[in-house]
Image (tube, rainbow over all chains, first blue to last red; front, side, top):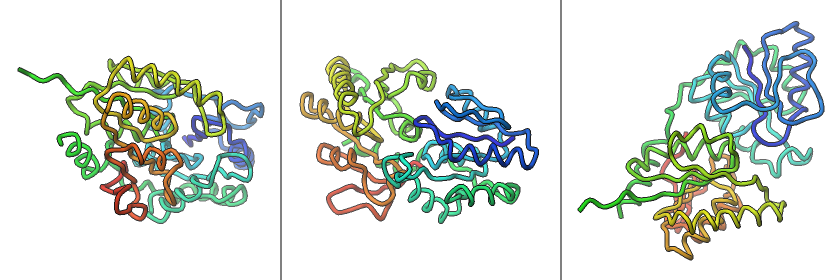
Length: 158
Length: 153
C-alpha cells in the first residue's frame, strides 16, 4: 500500500493530483491518501480528509512507501518506522506555506540519506515510476537523541 | 519529607511540533506534565495526563493569536507550572511570556528541526525568555544561544 499524507494544515492538491493521475495511468489500486479539507476530489485513489492519530499511525505501519508534503512530523514518523518516504515540499510562492522551510529541510534530510525528494509535479511524476527503488533508511529511535534528553535533564536538576 | 513532583507545561502547535514535543518526554520522567496544543484530536496521545487545546493560529491571524494568548494566560495562571517546554510556535512563546514574567517558571525552548537555515520567529523571540535555548542544527548554534546538544531525530 502507498500512503499519501498532506499533514494537518492546508490542502496540497498540487501533489495529490499528480498521484491521482499516475494511479490512473498505471492502474494502481493500492493507494490511500489523506488530503485535508479541499473541494477537489481524487478520482482514482482512495482518500479521506483527516485521520485520527491512531488511524494515521496504522496507515503508516501498513504502508510500503509513504509520499507526503515535507512536514517534520510526517518525516519523523516514517523514519521511526523505517518506511521509505518521498516528499514534495510546499512552496511559499504558490501560497502553500509561509516560507521555504519545507524545501530546505527536505534538502538537508535528503543529503543525510534519510528521504527522497521531488522538487515539483514533473519530478514527482518521474519518481513515482521508481518507487520500488526507494529503501527505508535505518529506523530512528522513537525518542529524541540521548544527548538532547540529557541536556534537558541536567538543566532541570540545576 | 518527599518533595512534590515538578510540574511542566509542555506546549506546541500541531503536526511536526507536537511530534517533536512527544519525542522529548523521556527527559521529563517523574514530572507532572500538563499538555497544551492546537488540536483536540491529540488528546488520545497523552493518556491520563492533563490536556488543554487551543484554537489554531498562524502568524498573520491577529484575532486567532489574541484568543490563543488569552487562553494560554488562563492555563498558566491556573496550572502554575515550575517549567515550560516548547518546540514552537507562537503558543510556546506566549506561554514563556506569562509563565516566566508572572510566575518565574523556568523555560526550555527546543526550536523545531524544520528550521534548518535560521530560527523561527517564535524561536528568536522566545530565546530572550528561555533559560535553556536550543536549536536542533549544529550550524545554527551560537555563543550565548541557541545551543546545540542533539536533535529529536
